[in-house]
Image 1 (cartoon, helix red, strand yellow):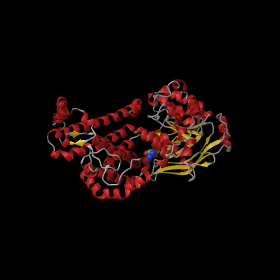
Image 2: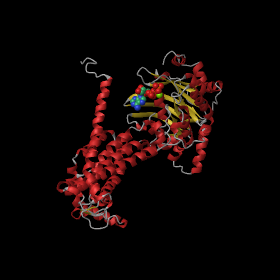
Image 3: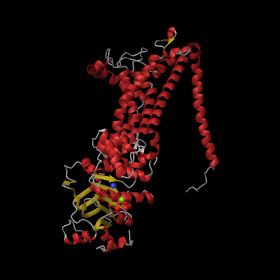
Length: 311
Length: 285
Ligand SMILES: Nc1ncnc2c1ncn2[C@@H]1O[C@H](COP(=O)(O)OP(=O)(O)OP(=O)(O)O)[C@@H](O)[C@H]1O
Ligand SMILES: [Mg+2]
């Protein structure tokens, strides 16, 4: 037994340790930001800002239009999130409330294992296994069913926005499910019983009480999953087709900002290198913007109910 | 021991009729709920058993007994709240009018709209406004017409003595109300569905004396509207609000059982079972 107090730091000691830790983190963040800005600065000083919304990427002719990559990033993320929100929420609800306890934990473990698979493995699986299936089966089928929307114009090629979005969906699903399951499970049982006692069906209890009760945490899950989707590099680079043109269909090959950076970084020098750093900054801004919108949503819908949840 | 339960079901028994008349109760009041040999076990361990009594329309029936005697467990058996507890098993018969509560064909959600419940801790839905809380049960039951909902919300809030203090802030969150007001909102929420029976599990135990008094007054006022079964730890409260009273006590094996049931006045002044006498005189529990 260790004598109590033997290794105890005085209060001021704790405070100093915490202050140093916080200062180191803040310094790292600032350093990181400054480094990127310094590297990116030549892009802005020689090209200005209009290139960010340029539509043509052709470095050999001095054209650095970033718009195709911004759109590609947003589109791939949108595909992944549109799939992950309902499926992730449904899975989380099932895990928290519907699945029998016996198989609950093994299912949960499976979901968490999915999160541990390295992204390059997802990418290779997408390229080698899923791409042919998408080209020959999934995309032709979707085109025949949803072709009227105009989203599925053009040839079915396998690699492209849709496949990258689906791979990303699989990658962000565990995040979505694991966090959602935890925040759904902590909705107080008294709320659930309160609804049941009024004659609510099981489905109504989940839909009207549990999900609204957990919405702050669910938006957190959404934000984290979206952040991961925006920044994912390797898997996307493997399956998106890396085409620097604005996609005209969800089946088109495209590129994202991370895939642009990882594919070009090795051979780039001078202005192009600076542009890649600047593209990284743009990605950072997009990430912060998505985060802020989600926070604002939480804030505007949760507002005055905060007092009740802390009761 | 368990056979000595002094229960006399039905008002046709001459002694019961005399007792009822002596207590100022209507001896032929319609029976709304019948409990016959009701027992609840968790994981094979009996928590409460041998419960047989009738619940009379327009009366308040109280359940009293020491902690752990199975009052909550019994109450929750009456609207099938144990359905979600995998380990729980309810045996015996519970009837609501002609409906066999535990018949396989009985829809528990429909049953719960006929047998409402108010919980120990006020539990309004924190994400909903006062108005939405008041009409939540009606919406669960498929009522969508705004006019109907508005009318029901007002009527239920008036009945729960909350209307005057909330009518100008119906869209405020329920969490802005005080604890006592939240509990009255929960009562209003239950009343809006127009249940035949309202189950209340120690509805005042989380409230201060003034809020408690108002809920007690409310319980008495609501008798004409709904039959009430109330669990309470507080014997004064049982005397103040209830017409009939059921006393539960743990047996040797820690399982709760019904010791005595009768008009409240009689149960407190001249109980037939010595254990009831001990309990109401504060000698144990
Ligand atoms: N979900 C459950 N699982 C297992 N045992 C339970 C469960 N609910 C209640 N019990 C047991 O049933 C017995 C009766 O509990 P109950 O809550 O009905 O007592 P009570 O009379 O309401 O007590 P109190 O006055 O303290 O509220 C206790 O021994 C309790 O441990
Ligand atoms: Mg209890």
